[in-house]
Amino acid sequence: MMVTVAGGGIAGSYLANLLSGDHDVHVLERQRPDGFRAVCAWGTSYHEMRRLLEVVDVEFDDYVLHVGKKMIIDLGQDTVDVPLMGLCTFDKRKLILDLHRRIKVFYGVEVKRSEDLRGDLVIDATGFHRVLLPRLARDYYIPTLEYLVKYREPPIDDFYVKPIKPLSGYFWYFPLGNGLAHVGAGDFYKRHMQVLDEFVSRHGGEVLSRIGRPVRITPPHMTKPFNDGSVFGVGESIGAVYPVLGEGIIPGMQSAEIFYRLLSSSRLHDYERELMDFFRPYYLAFQFIRKKIRREYRTIPDAKLLLDVFIHMKRNEQRYGMKIRLRDWLKVVRTYG
Ligand SMILES: Cc1cc2nc3c(=O)[nH]c(=O)nc-3n(C[C@H](O)[C@H](O)[C@H](O)COP(=O)(O)OP(=O)(O)OC[C@H]3O[C@@H](n4cnc5c(N)ncnc54)[C@H](O)[C@@H]3O)c2cc1C
Image (cartoon, rainbow, N blue to C red):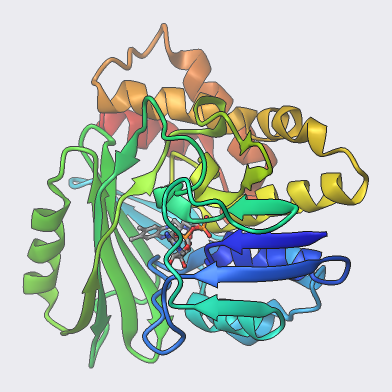
């Protein structure tokens, strides 16, 4: 088949690599390789990334920048130290550009909304923009701002996050090695810039670049349709982002993996059902976060929701790259009650 992938971010590039052995695939990417920006804090979980990349013969270890030992969650009066099980940062820009080298990519091509693209199958992998699939009636997203900072002496030597009340976002400090860090914040109520600038003015460092864009947290249960004629969505365009963390790298690649598996077994008609099954825990996590954002979360009536999120992450500790402990969860949720 001839497959056109609109968007050469992590989800589109990964899918194009999966498909390229069996199909005639090309990617249309609006950015150019020099100056290509992989807007993201570049945090992920080692074990799942390794597994996903092995399938396309890419060695994840070549891209890892920092492997965390613990993540400090700063609760203001108190801190929680979360032991890590593979949470790391990696050079996402280099990985994406290396994935591009193995396929056909046309750079500097901006796909327009509703454009009729050539191909038996067309993939909307344009992330937040969702250029080819129908617009969403209700979309939830967190505005973010992130700096790349160079430190002579880094203020923190591992992962550090500080939630923003009422759990409507958080500040992050993700080490990238060699004195570099992604320092950023996102908040539904748009107070993130203030939080970020406070940190930067307190800890100094040379700000090398600034970037910001919203992250979609609307889960796949609310981003249907996933396909429109010959167009199918993968990645953030269909809400493959874990809402509690704003984490979209692994979920985007997992949605691509599901698409590839179903296409290979001539079962694309099952795409919607499989996505709904796979991303069901994301819907529950979204409900929890939405309640927190709206300040509607109640300890007793909503305990089941909190427990659902906890159990999902606890069962998938290695996937999330961190030790999940109930007492940590309760402490964070109580502090931001
Ligand atoms: C500040 C920030 C920090 C984040 N940190 C993390 C993190 O640490 N870990 C994590 O897992 N997730 C993180 N996320 C979320 C994660 O980056 C995204 O969810 C993930 O990259 C989505 O992948 P994608 O390929 O679906 O979309 P994208 O990464 O958005 O890629 C879409 C691609 O399509 C291209 N494109 C867009 N429109 C067009 C068009 N019209 N025509 C042609 N090309 C187009 C873009 O240039 C881009 O290359 C973060 C997000 C932000 C904003």
